[in-house]
Length: 423
Image (cartoon, rainbow, N blue to C red):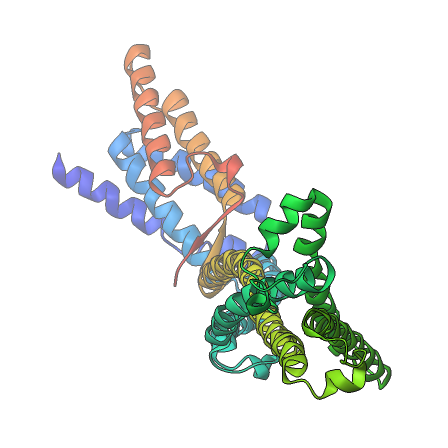
């Protein structure tokens, strides 16, 4: 039995594994298909339709067809053309993706440098504000608080001085007990409110007039041009004259209280030679000048400090926007890298197909069908078997045919027009 089976295999191998001379010599595909039918028919008769022989014959048929396709260079080039065109399209797409990727990488580098520079600016602006166009130097905050520490007691001094001096000049009646408090009267505000609430409000608000003048001087210093100095000079002159009037009025009241019948009328000439007259002026006007200078210095420090804070706030907002741009760019960069990797994979896969050889599935499937048709026709017409056994044999051969197609990846040939085999 085994010897007979081996002879059948050898016979079939000799018959099928040839070079298909009809096709290579005549070039007629229809004749080749007819030949496959005849060979399937003849092999089936000789093998008595046995499934195991049918399987071997199908394998030989496929190997023969595969070898034939391998040697048909012109047809192979034609079949591979679609892959070459697809590869070129992917290479063009790859260049676009690589260009986009380079732009994204350059942008990421630029964003990183900008973020680093912004963070550095936020630190350095506190130490070197002048580098960023902000007036001031080191220790702006220290200078501001020192100015505030000086301004507060000087302000209290001016309040006390002008309340007392104005009360003495406008409303106070001197007597023997009050001469010692001619310049400073501890009860000035209390006495003013006891006399009248309007008198009290007047005395209490007069110091703010002088402070308002000092604030105006600070604002005028911000202006440009020579005119600001004229305005500042006029404001200083007004303040000085007011202090002169206060000093003159107080000294006049003291002089009138102490004068005798032989005393001369009190005049400015007399006042100019009185020490108390100049004491009142300098105790008010000079301290007022000092107050104005301290206020101006402190306000400048505050403005510089506020500019630094504003600068840092703006930089923080810029930093948030830069981080958002960086995240969006990083996401775009990652997508670009994934796309480049995917396209390179497609190109490599296409190159593998180009380097191999291609089998036209539908053509082979038609050859397979013709060979199977011849085999089945021989089983049905030439092999003497009972009907039931013949039906069973045909069913077994059909199973062998499907297994063979599945083994070579052609279980559904209509979904795959061709297959690629690596060299």
